[in-house]
Image (cartoon, rainbow, N blue to C red; front, side, top):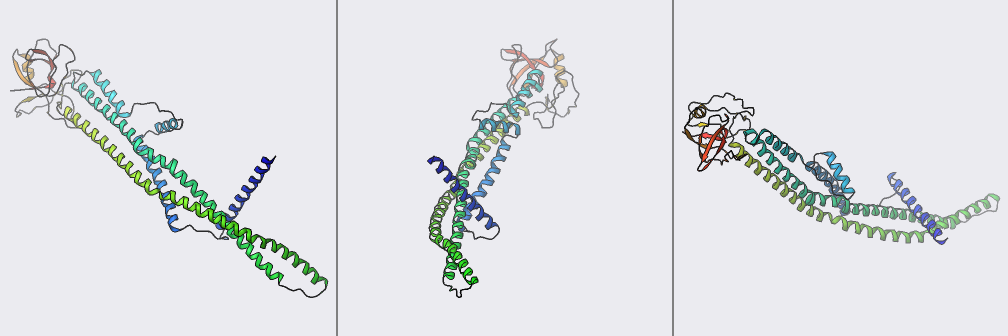
Length: 403
């Protein structure tokens, strides 16, 4: 029963405090009550904290969009994070593209120029996908996590203390208002007590009775002065203490900025590493494709016709460099056709690396010189190559015939 009485009293006291704050807040908005202003330094700190929170949220959300453009994937990761479970690993877009290219190159045949190029491009795309995955992991750990910790941790504490400061200010201003009213009542009571009523008619006696009751009512307010002054001292002390706590928390925003600056440097370094890796991967791929001929036999072994300048000093299967807009189709030069029709042998330079698909083929290294000759009945896309004691079929699209 005592516990119930205590809970009821506490509930009534909390309700009274809430009502008092609501009245004070409403009167302030209507301009009917005075408001205690915070000092300029504290106001600046509050503004700085709010600005930090707003821009941190925007930067964090946009960074998440940058690292994971798929909104469905972001929602899935958010759900797994809230469930405190690890999100399943999924293949990213560069890795998926790379796998498609490798599968296509294998299907077309690694011995063909197009198939070989697809495989090399696919391997590079998968490397880029791995680098992209590392960028996401590093950025999430070193950049996004500190920003999220600030929003969900430090700033929530600041917001809580700021709200408590607002309540303490309302309590302080309500106490000031009550003290002001109590002093006004005390003054009026003193004035009425000093008034002397004369006459003995009924109206005078009735007026005296009303004045007596009025004085008694005003004395009740007068008795509130001491209580109001004591309450004002308590609320002023609580407000000052809460203002100091809030100020100390807000001054930590400068340390937060310094920490976020270090995190930003880590993010920039992660991006720099990622883009440097991608550049190197593409540079290596360009060098590999640069030795590919600009034209070569189609996979269906149909020969396209392309004019070759008679002023060329050597008969080349294709251009030694691959431009972004050049096609990958080649015409067999007339001297190689002549070579296939005769029984002689010639020297040829290897344009780019070739890995033998089976024991009947000869692996090649770019820029090496081998001996080639034709064999009756061999496919038109192949010649027999010889390097020392090693012999095997070699694709003519990988060769530059020397004079």
